[in-house]
Amino acid sequence: MVLNMEKQKRQAILGKAREWISANGFSNFTMSKLAKFCGIAKGTLYNYFDNKEDLMVKVVEDRVVEIHREVDEILGGAQDAEEKLRSMIRQGLEFYRDNVDLLIVYANEVKIADCKFPSSATAHGRFLREHLDWFVSRFEQLLAGMGIKRERRLLAYLFHQSLENVMSFNMLFGRELDIDRDANLLYSFYFHGVEAFQ
Image 1: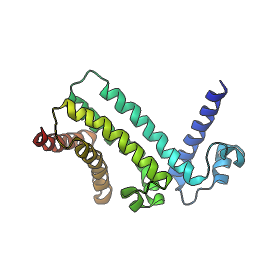
Image 2: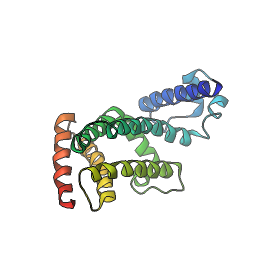
Image 3: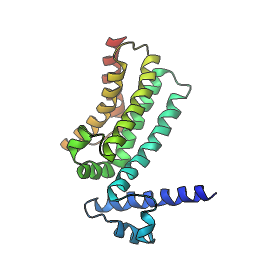
């Protein structure tokens, strides 16, 4: 029971931190400001997080854990492999749409270069590598179900990057995200590409 209460407190702090950072940015963020925003003592925050950088990684990681759950639900469902691919594309686009402000702040604060070429010595680097390993292994299974025999790991990574690149393109060029249109575009682009690896 105590463990559940501690977990609930930690989740509540993460939710408030996400809310504050999305509205104000990370560069203005301090543990004191978050404590005041949460209505708790600053020292309480350090019971759950080592420092503000650790907290920032945990805020994003918390969102990604939700995505992992959704991906597992898709992969465990009754759909055929191609429909699972469509569902994963939609889910990825919806994740970026729903978290774009937080992801921009995060990328700017940890430095864009570290997002593209993460060092495993940093909290961000470890988190990103763990997430990519998790995602790529799941997606490799899906590709195997689609009859893809070669380069499944690389193709899984390219799928992850293609979702990110659509969102980057939309932000850079002011193109509005349309989940249906972009999901169909990515599905056609990706599915016809991987056919060559069967």
